[in-house]
Image 1 (cartoon, protein in one colour):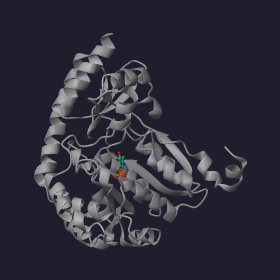
Image 2: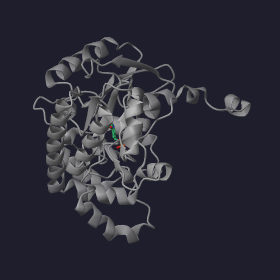
Image 3: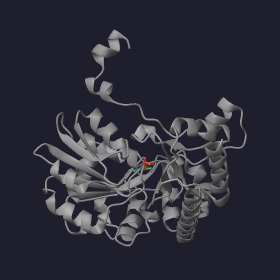
Image 4: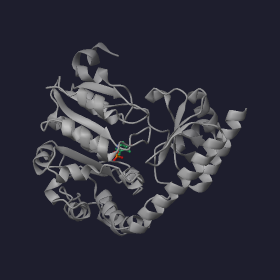
Length: 367
Ligand SMILES: *Cc1c(COP(=O)(O)O)cnc(C)c1O
């Protein structure tokens, strides 16, 4: 690094760990000269976007010369009735990632503390570190948030607690009773972010819906996204529901046209496409059952998931498994970046993708 950058850049940026995203299909094609590649690395919907969203986009492509609605008026109206909140309780962002960043820009001063699970979604540490927060990473128990330890980590400096539920990368969720007990211990001036990016995939009956705590008047933010079950990851659009005063504060630091025109139109159409959501849930549920069964046949331990990905112990070096799978045209995520060097995280795909992944994994583990 040049002396110029060392001297002039903000010190916080040198505390950041680089993000390792799932490899894009085109990059693997280029690098390996492979044609037929499947990506099971970033929890994208194997059914693709809602056909209604595609149609709405097609009809609006000729509007692209206009700036988008800065306030996402129609989408907020629709989301408000969908969620049972007021439209002044909603923030819409260029992916929930942007909203996570706006949140710390609004609330974090240097030296403030944030708490999250270890391992959990990397954006919490990334965004908070940029603002100079002290990050308290609390190890999971049984692949789930240790809410008792997280509550015990709260002190006068704590500003935000991130509860990724179900947790990424493990897929496990905390129960309603655990969340209730935890919320009873959180002081009112600490914000709890319920990151429910995979909410629509959850199957367990005692899942704590973050919206309930919001309705109780608690200081919570519920974060959801159009990137996962709605299949719009490439358009970048996510939302948060919270108290009007938090919305107003975060809006102060938000760029005027942060959510693009096409994303707003596609999200509105996707929200109305119940058939697509239900088909996606069914496909995921069946895919989970298939993969569980195959892992059991192979004698592999896995974490039962409430999301659309499975954290599975290959009992081999995950980097080696990753490389071998890639040579067979299957992209997954390795567990080493999360502290689990023999685990991989695989997105539940279409039936043919799941079969191809299992066949490839069997070949690799038998070799
Ligand atoms: C994918 C994901 C998000 C959503 O990110 P977007 O920026 O909306 O695409 C948020 N939180 C978690 C835990 C995720 O896995």
